[in-house]
View 1: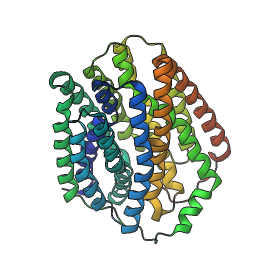
View 2: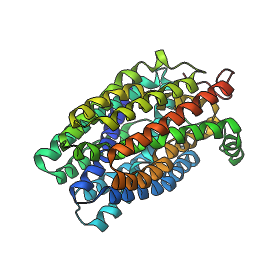
View 3: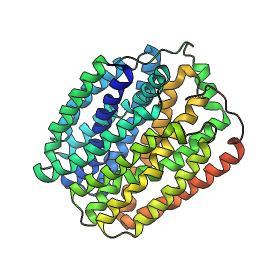
View 4: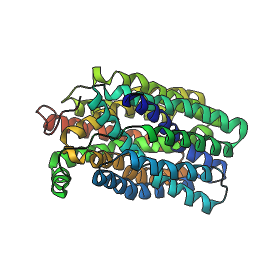
Length: 387
């Protein structure tokens, strides 16, 4: 089997694991009797763990010049810990295993994206043709997980998680590694990347847009259940969200134009604003689930443009680390604020106030994105071009 085909299968399976972790961990914790504040504490603390883990594993990957071998280690531990997490009921064990899973599972995301871009480049295929399978795996597994929880109970997803983890390990065992950068890794190149004003402003934009997106990711399932929905409806909501991404990623070669990334990010922030504003006023859990189809205009557009922009300004030898910085902001730093603040806000004021707040935050992201586009979006970018 060729490299892109194996990588497509790996994307499907890894994002299947994420589908059981990101949207369903809060639902599972709620099933164990935890309130929104406690759920926010666990997810927020997991953000701190991710803050350490993603740079650590990204640096290890860059220094050892291998992605695949690092993935094998992370997948092995993730499969075991994921089973133990979803088989636990004790609050202490839930916290412990959740933190360990954040440490081993979340760093796989930036490493996978690094593989996606590198192998797509080397094979002459589009990034979207590979990443599409991640969206498919996320959507299908979210739907299946919802039904599994409803019919066989919350603990039944422990076996599902472990099984998919083992298959992911087997695929990554025969998968080729990412092409090694020809330039040596130097701390000065990373310092130059992070000290550039344009880069810092771009990362600020990513952070502002990521916080409301992460609040929605964490508390959507809790909100649907509060409105009277079931775990399977949560799965259906995430299936609609993830499946809507498929066409966006598949056609990224057509709509994702070089030099237009900032305005594309700005447009996606505007749709985030509309999506969260509508979520605040919906009282029927089924309509809230249907609304997730607006994912087609938000996350895949935002994240694809952000990755392409990043890869055009990051030094080639620091691509894995640069991807880690982006993932760190989206899943780590922003996740910490989203979890702690979101959990406290939800617990005190309810879901409607939470969604009104994140709608305002998305509007702020849209404004910042437009200002950056006016300054940087109309001139050539530095660094390497990414097809």
